Length: 91
Figure 1 (cartoon, helix red, strand yellow):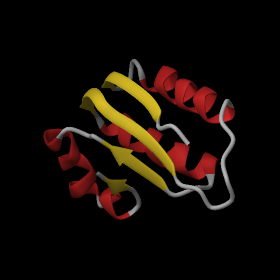
Figure 2 (cartoon, rainbow, N blue to C red):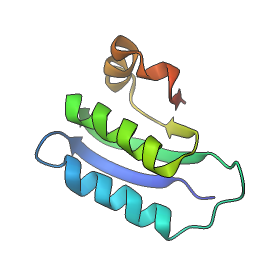
Figure 3 (tube, rainbow, N blue to C red):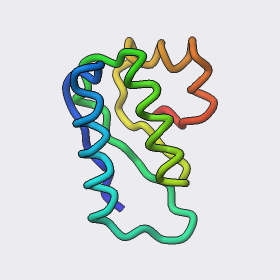
């Protein structure tokens, strides 16, 4: 499956739109049993605490392993501090 794509800041203002876009993209794709979902984060410029909750919510809704691809190094830090790097594969 092609990665889902998101971009820009993910904060309290944009988080609902970003989640809706991820879910829209997910519904438009067919997944094989057990297939992980990759999200291309290479164009994400900011992740706040709302973004961390959003990724967790998305993972719970999708019921799949989620791989965040291309997340810029400085934006990985909140995942590491919160322990979410144990729930998501960061590539």
